[in-house]
Image (tube, rainbow, N blue to C red; front, side):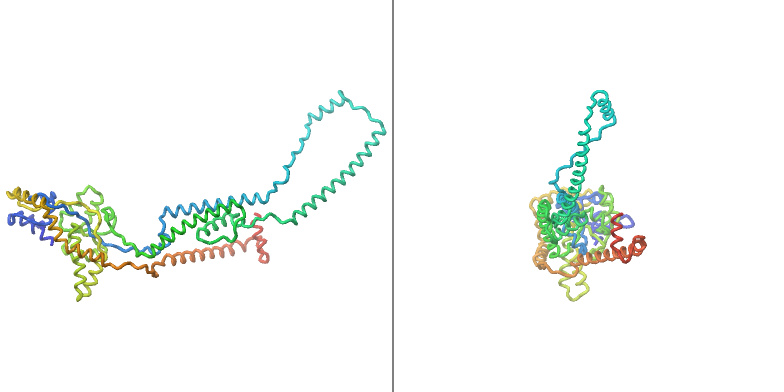
Length: 475
């Protein structure tokens, strides 16, 4: 097919349509002649009569992300936000539980301890001695008064001893009574008094696992209620998204932009060397990358097979791409005698995809000989044809069968049924395998620590292992 348009030969001449016009064998050439400098060097071009969207025909690949089923319902930023809320919520539960434990164990009925009087300084003692000796000497007491004071002091010491022992007995009885009294109830606070348990129970509520007991503190109860509302919202959103993922078929990866095609490993192909030069001289970096791996093709059937195998992308106008897609689709359906061709073409049509974005909107013209006297008349005639709408009508007539076939194919597709298969449960199997592997590794680590650290410790007693762990807590 490439010879129909023309290709430069080894002797410098051109074959096909371009060669016929260049050497003067044809006055007018009608074909997919792009209005580019490449053609203007060889022949004259009339005014463009249509603009075509040039794009690529690429393979459509079905993704296999079934092992990510459990994390697909939320994006990465959503998972990060949920992790942050779990950490903040667990720390808040731990803080409130610690505060409640402090309140429950502290007795606010006792008066604050009175401060002890300060001992007099040496300077004040010396000043008092000097004052009593030289300024105000106390009068001498009679002998009988001194005797009575000694008796009172002796009686006071006895009273002091009696009062002291009575105070001790009273304190002892009070302490015994307090021990016999029921301690303040801290039921439910043990869930969050340890930081690790706090994070664990916070996560368990998010996984719709109920708490063993309701916390006693009202602040904890209020926080628990609002945390339940948050968990309901997250769980409902996750379940709805997961149901949609399981009910729908696996998404298909398509290439719809030039940047995506440049980043892929597909080879690019098209008709003629001028297309490769077009990409190589492009100012776009992605276009230059495509030009470096661009290849010329000659057989369209080979092209379709390579595209269906996921190795090639084909560059042409969008009308021709639709034409070859429907052509090989119809051929595969009608040719029931050759099962090999039938299966090949069905596979091809199930994996062909036309890029949604146009690489360039290229003007298309008629070809004329260089300095042809017919060019002004041809331009005038083409202008009238364009104004009359004949070009669009002819294009619609040519594409009518393709449009009808495409519409029937879209309307004839059966509705996708929400069927479950083993492949959609790969995510759960992956979670089980990872969890089992981590459990085995932790078990091996505990065994290694038991034999290499615990049993070699001087505090270890095989008949009283509890004492060893109490010793560890003490240190």
